[in-house]
Image 1 (tube, rainbow, N blue to C red):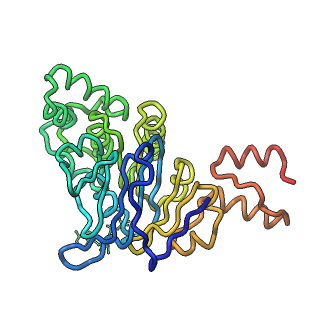
Image 2: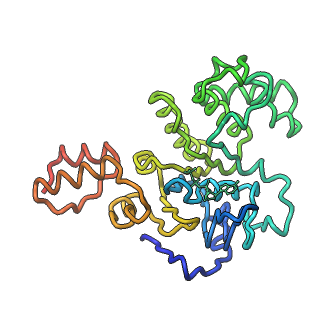
Image 3: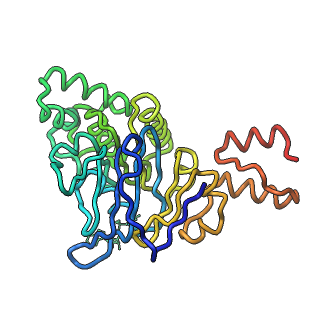
Length: 295
Ligand SMILES: Nc1ncnc2c1ncn2[C@@H]1O[C@H](COP(=O)(O)OP(=O)(O)OP(=O)(O)O)[C@@H](O)[C@H]1O
C-alpha cells in the first residue's frame, strides 16, 4: 500500500511499533541557523531487517534526514526515538555505535595516518585491544574489497576508494543501522556492484538495516524493500518499489525519473498494445517476463 502524506496536515506520530522500529523520527521541522528549512513535517521509521531508500531531487532534505538518524542533527521541533528511547530527552552519547553514517563526501570521514588505522580507530575507542581491532578492521576492509589498500594514506586514495574505506570503518563497528548518502555515486561499475552486493549482505547476513539517500532510481528499484519519496523536506509518499515506481504521477511529482526496467516495460507494453499488469522492477523480473511471454 502506498502511503501519501499531505504537507499541510502533519499528524505527529509516536513510535508506531517499538518492536519493529529501530529508529523513529517525528520531526515537525529542522531549521538551519541561516533560516533554511531542511525538514518540514517529516515522519520516518527505519525498521528491522530492511533496505529503505530516500529518493528526491537535490535539496529535497535527504541528507538532513540522514543526519538526524544518529543525532548529529536534532529536530528544531519534534523528537527521534532509537529502539524506543527518545534521544532529545535522553542520553545520546552511544548512538554512533548503533547508527553509522557514510557521508557523500567520504574524505570528511577519514583522518588517521593509514587506511587500517582509520578503520581501527572506532574499535580502539570502544576499548578493543589492538590485535582484535586489527583483525576486525582487516575483515571489514576485505568485505568491501579494499584489503589491498590497508597501508595507504587516506589522502592519496581515489574518491571511490575513500568511499569503500568509509563503509569499512562503519561496518567494523557492527551498528544496527547504516545510512549511506549516495552510496555508489562516484564508484566504477565493478565497485558499484560490489557495494550493491554488500548492502544486501548487510541486511541478509549481518541483520543491519540500511538507509540509502539516492537520485539513482535504478539502484533504488533493485535494492529497496521500501522507497520514500522526499520533496521540500517532507516524505510525501512511501511504499514498496513495485507500487512507487509504477505510479508515474508520484515519480513526476517528486521530480524524478522512472527506473530503466520500468520505462522499458511500459514502452514495450505500449508498442504491443498490452495493458501493463505485471510490474517487473529489476532486470531479472523483466527478462523472465519476456521469456515466459506476455499476454
Ligand atoms: N548546513 C546547512 N546550512 C543551511 N542550509 C542547509 C544546510 N544543509 C542543507 N541545507 C538546506 O536544507 C535543504 C535540504 O538540503 P539537503 O542537503 O538535506 O538535501 P538533499 O536532498 O540531501 O540534496 P542533495 O541530493 O543535493 O544532496 C536545502 O534547501 C539546503 O540548501
